[in-house]
Amino acid sequence: MLLGILFMFASCDVAKKVIDENMPQEQDATEDVISSITGEKKETIEDTTITKLSKKELKKLKKERERQEKIAAGDTLGFVEKTWRKYFPKKVDRIISFPNFYTQQPKSILILYPWNRSKNKTAPEMYLINLSKELSQKGYYVVPPLIIFDKYQEDTLSTAQYIKPSEAKKYKQEYGVDAVMFITIYTLNKPWWSTNINSVAEYSLISTSTTDTLFYRKADFSYDSPIPPYKVNKSKDTYEFEPRVIPLFGTCFQMQRSVFMDFPYGPYHKKHLKDQKKFSYPKEMKYKVDARPS
Amino acid sequence: MKKILIITFTIFVLSSCSNALYKYYDYDNLLYAYGSRNISEKEMRKFVKKYARIVDKPKGKRELPPPGACAEYGYLLFLQGKTTEAKEYLVKETVLYPESQTYIDALTKKLGL
Image 1: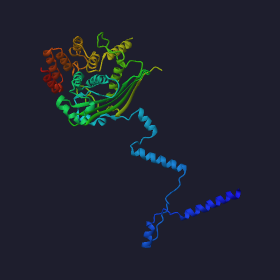
Image 2: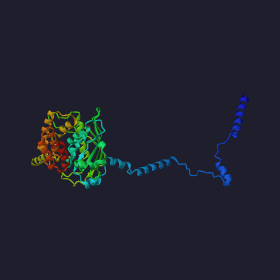
Image 3: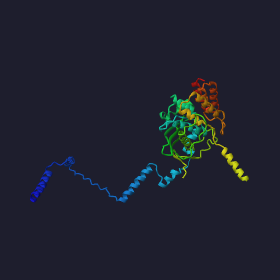
Image 4: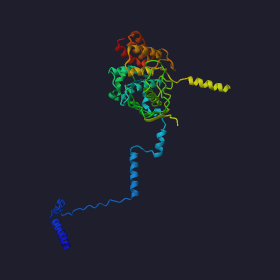
């Protein structure tokens, strides 16, 4: 039995050798043919550049590459400085943040009906009312929201979604305004399980004479406090706010105040052009009003 | 005692001062109601009456109606059929705020005033 098995193994091995020797080999014979014709020797390439790196060296190399990528992306701050800047942003003068603003000095502003991407149906109304009030208090002439509402309902004025900033020039002729405000509302909601009200929106003010961006800001505003964000006028009439609307409207009101805190003053304000060297916020901001009792 | 009185008086004076250029009264409630739901004719009359305070009793630092308020009020009067009064307020808007001239002209033309 044992002899039989050994014989089988030996015969298999012999058979394999015979097959390997007689089978045609897959080789690129073109170089051999060329070398036989020209008489030159076939070149053999040996890779000598491969160097084995230790784990430590590999880690170092990886870190260096990451650093270079960060520098290329413009992120040169260290972790500590970056975290510090997150909470205490670098002070920049308004004249540097909004250079076009001070050169063009817009006087009148048209706020287009906001592009509502949130689930709140009345968010555009809340934004329009609060923003027009805020800009008026800053010293600008704002085309009244009531007329915008009616124009929008009549379909003679579309939302900010369908108008490109490059088309802003036509509003100079139609309304005689110096700038047009485009608003995109991303969220305005208060989840039932939370006391936090969140609102995210993007604002861009475009000049109607040059189509330059005079002001741009994307804001993420959170209001978390048992104190109502807005003092309601208690009038005994049919126009009183519904209780569920008050916190949302109030948050919207607080948001406009925060976002436009560093907005340059307009010609009807006594501080007009006197605020050029005042503090200005970054273009993208997270605002949080958290006044919960501990 | 004198010092306390002076401090209290100063606080009272400072707290009564407002930096707001214009006073809006219950503009928010009114405009939100107008923008978010349909208003009946009866409600509209009440609405215009309420709105009149913003235009006729201006307060704030400038002591003038806020920008656009006269135009809005004029437009509301037009919706009620008071065309002569409506035109008056639209003209008042252009006098107070000359930059409104272009769209007020267009609005007056559109309303046939």
